[in-house]
Image 1 (cartoon, rainbow, N blue to C red):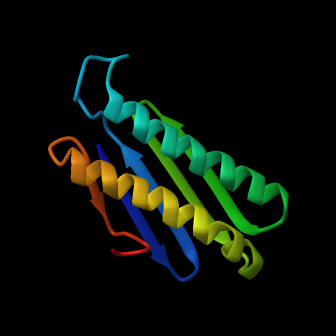
Image 2 (spheres, rainbow, N blue to C red):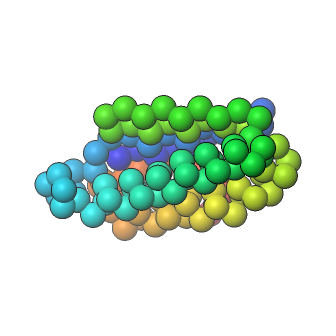
Length: 111
């Protein structure tokens, strides 16, 4: 799996793609953990958008790919940054624990 965080001019893009291949489909704990972190991000952004904390939000999903593009307001960023940092840390832990199956690039909160 490839996880990539990008930030440019106030816009953030998070892309999660691929399949871990740690175990057969339906039994892959690495895919399950990654999917749960991605779902948490998506739900958090959707809620923040309804609260007016985002200037822009795009959610694109296809087989094995989740792309989240958004631009937070200042108040939105103050609410989102702890969640983004925690989720990014979760991805970092997965990449450290399963380096053959998860790759994390371009972090927002480098360790």
